[in-house]
Amino acid sequence: MSVRLLNAKTAKFVQEVQGWTDDANKARDFGGATNALFYCYQHHLADVRIIGQFANPRENFDISVRESTFE
Image (cartoon, rainbow, N blue to C red; front, top):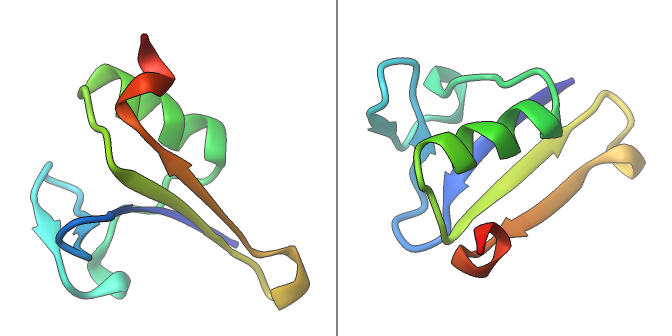
């Protein structure tokens, strides 16, 4: 399982050092959607997608995070 944050506008992933990368393999793995959502809240990120990928593709998810989520 992996959970990553993808910028919806630039199609880049959050990296370990608060940078962004085109390479999903170099992206930070948050380990869960809740951790990713808290990261968005703490860093005031909006227009991102929380992408969850599992061994079984039927379990994959894609959650849009918009600015209004934190109002």
